[in-house]
Image 1: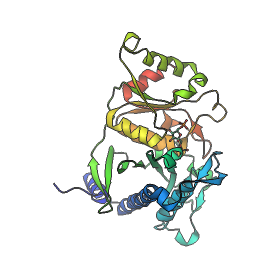
Image 2 (image 1 turned 30 degrees about the vertical axis):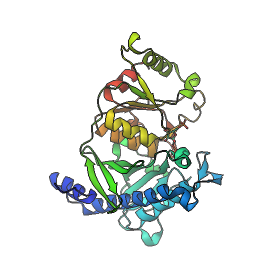
Image 3 (image 1 turned 180 degrees about the horizontal axis):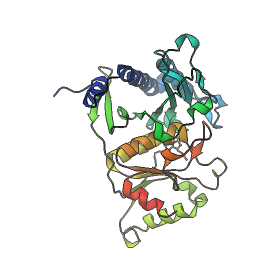
Length: 332
Ligand code: FBP
């Protein structure tokens, strides 16, 4: 059976649903092209001498890596050409990016993204990724302002991520399940390799940065303590732990073999509301995980129901295997 390319799969999916939106297929193809280009930039890394940090900080107060800026420029450069977007917003830019007037066309959508997730890992050659979320631009808005982006995650029309690991993969949902594609570098094409990905409902593996333990809220402390008690404890089973410090890599592992990924709020992050960003990390990954049968919560509510109040807003994140996230949330 011939391998199906990314665009062949998208056209097939549309045919199956009686949808005829070539523009949307082309729009997603541009996302794929941008991820291929970022994959090259990341894997060439030290060869191009771009593994260092810059003398400046992004709006998050983080020292920007050279690759943060390079990948941000790639993602904007490739996706603005065809004019599908009225505007873009990125982890690496304080304000929304305005599409140059000469490139503005239909502009029905808004693109929000984290060009290089897990960037603290990029110069130590551990998997990193790109995360994106696509929203509809409000009717009649040509040059969107921040308020136009502040839409709840439940309104996303598409989200996904690219993982730059031992192979480069692209995983997306358009609201009809989750599918994964692997990049064949010889051909320069993404091929369907993971059809209808489903998160196993149960797990014995948690992912959390244990070094924050003393600052956690009681529900998180109690949940992890019960997991660590293993078979003799209230959970009655042995738990394993993983922490890659790249959200994309953690969520991808969980899509494949189950697990629970947690970045809760703690006493150090209380003023910020959490570590991970709602609009271009938590919302897109929540759409993916839920479409694959998992759950995603802040501990107190479904993340995609959170009404955003700021473009770079941070939230607590608990996502993964359905029964385990339910169990963890029962501690709140
Ligand atoms: P960015 O790299 O895009 O800033 O993302 C944040 C992130 O790196 C996540 O990918 C990861 O899950 C988390 O931070 C790691 O946090 P920590 O540094 O506490 O291990």
